[in-house]
Image (cartoon, rainbow, N blue to C red; front, top):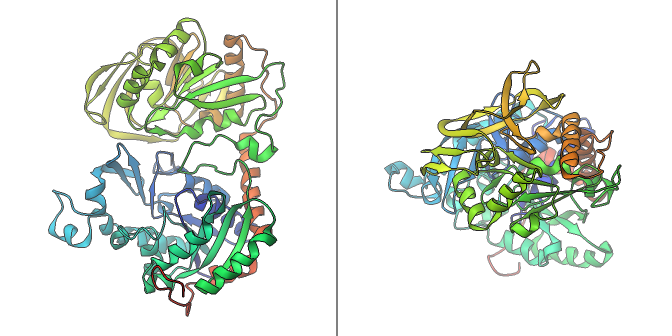
Amino acid sequence: MNGGLLVAGTTSDAGKSVVTAGICRWLVRQGVKVAPFKAQNMSLNSFVTREGAEIGRAQAMQAQACRIEPTALMNPVLLKPGSDRSSQVVLMGKPVGEMSARGFFGESEGASPGERLHGGRQQALLGTVLDCLAELRGTYDAVICEGAGSPAEINLRRTDIVNMGIARNARLPVLVVGDIDRGGVFASFFGTVALLSPEDQELVAGFLVNKFRGDVSLLEPGLDMLHGLTGRRTYGVLPFRHGLGIDEEDGLRVSLRGAVRESIVAAPVGEDVLRVAVCAIPLMSNFTDVDALAAEPGVVVRFVDRPEELADADLVVVPGTRGTVGALRWLRERGLADAVARRAAEGRPVLGVCGGFQILGEHIEDEVESRAGHVDGLGLLPVRVRFAREKTLTRPVGEALGEHVEGYEIHHGVADVTGGEPFITDGAGHLLDGCRVGAVWGTHWHGSLESDGFRRAFLREVAAAAGRRFVPAPDTSFAALREEQLDLLGDLIEQHADTDALWRLIESGAPQGLPFIPPGAPA
């Protein structure tokens, strides 16, 4: 078998990532050897594979749904925005430079005549993308591909390598997901297909309704009419479930426990609840680091952007960012920098992760990311940071607070720790990363809080410094909660999609003979 499917969406945040993961988990439970794929991803939430390649976290999550190790093949092109107009281009897991949107999607001043003719550097990557997909399809029974944004972005169709461009070249059937919770889902389905060319329309097999609330029987007449208008069936209606936005590219969601336990805040084990405030800094990256905190019973996590919102927080987290110097400036402009410094002076807990760790240091030398040169940090940790052109991409293992800890590093900043207490060591007392001064901690390691023993030890330290009678749950397993959530996604597909029809679609390939819909007019 050499099956495949492209999961497209009527909009960004329609649920493509979680639907793709759900289909993957459903298939692997049927004994199918399956892999995820996203040709091109734009996200600040990324992950490092065991071979040291950087890919989107959504694809790492989907690989976990497939019960396989993620690799660079699953996300060959990753764009990490650095501003509204430019992004770092990561190709096959390694950064290859900064590029403007105009240069990537179309013409640029430095583009060669061939690139200008064929639509910029993006189109030049099509061969790489197709080779990666072909290798996966040669290894696995089925590959479930995720699109990006909408396939009907007609201004970008000429250079598309992630939606209909990949579907047409690889002859993949396309399932269009629509978020009915936003409203207008029938118009979105019809309009998406109608805007496509006849050749692209041939590949659209049908629709999947996502996030439905209420009685499905009330929706069915509309689905019948949609079939009459488009000639395409609906493969399922997935009900709304809280907290299923795991490791997506769009939005800030910290609701893992809400999905699994059907309660936004689980009852604490001790007498107190622990409140965590995460500074919503610009170009925030890997904010999923705090998911593990939110999974703990009695821990409340929220994102904040005003200093007064730190007042009742027991822990303030300064997260990672793709623009460290810009985020530092933003913290100062909004008064958050002073509020964090006051907390530190009062012995109240603060944690900096990656870019947040760098911000808490004494000074930053940046001729790479912002090209701002020397910039003073908040001075809360004895750390000096120099930005290197080579990006650190590793999956380290160590010990912190007497517990085993694992993480992953994604940063250009190189930290010179000149004092304080070592934070993460090799177990023999030799510093691996980070430092601590009083109740202020900093580390470059993303994902460290997913290590259960370390997370509990850290929360005990936070509770003691905050004067809270909070006790971490002794049996919370983040890995088990994540597996439980992935199974919930698989259950949604198995229970609310026509899995027989979906399987035939994946197995048989691109549909044939579906009617053409003239743009903007009913069939």
